[in-house]
Amino acid sequence: MKRIFLFLVLCTAVLACSKDEKTYEHWSNLANEKLNEIQALSQKVSCTNIDDFEVVSIGYNIYSLNHPSIKKEFEKLQKEYNNFRAKADKAAGDGRVYNDMIMLPATPPIRKECKNGKATLVLIKDLNLAETNKEIASRKKEIDTFYKDVVCGNANDWSLIAIPKDCCPEFIPINNKIKRNEFLVLTNTYTQLVSKKQILENKTCVGIVCGQKPPTIACEGEKVVLKPSTL
Image (cartoon, rainbow, N blue to C red; front, top):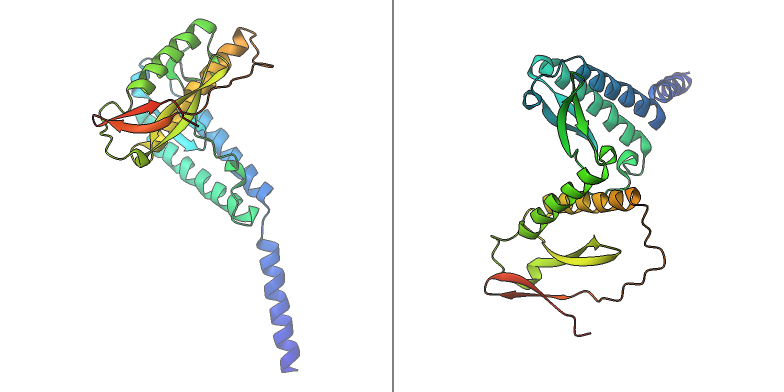
């Protein structure tokens, strides 16, 4: 009789746990609903001075605008969103984060502005050709000067990444220890801008063969330099 009672208690506990378990889709839907609430909250504030609004990263490649008048409610909704998203990721299983599976560097908004009385984030997809060209030039200047004050004492502290130049890659050095993620976000934004430019110009790189070899990295005069490959 005692064994039967313990068996019934165990079964009840298992069924209760199973009943409480939710799927990835369940938690993901709740997270998305909370995200919509966050975006709707930002739109309730009239925009007369865009500098009053702060760009906030909600999640991977998800951004919104916060204002002092809604800060408390905004942060509450953000905390609830993060909670639901964490539960969704846990429910996904195998330690995988399904919403962040493609972990490319993020692409932040290009700028924030007041539009029709509402605070708005301007994304790469919103740019016209003239704006795209302007942003490309600005980002390229940032890339070229990003590490200008970093001393190169060991070439092994550096590696190569490629950014687009016309239809072929341009190899540039990246420091493995200093502001690596920040630089990757910058170069990814630049790459997305170049892709946007090609779309606007109806340009294709299909069939173009690029034969250049990756250069080698060296330190000269405490500066990082790229030398032609000897391979």
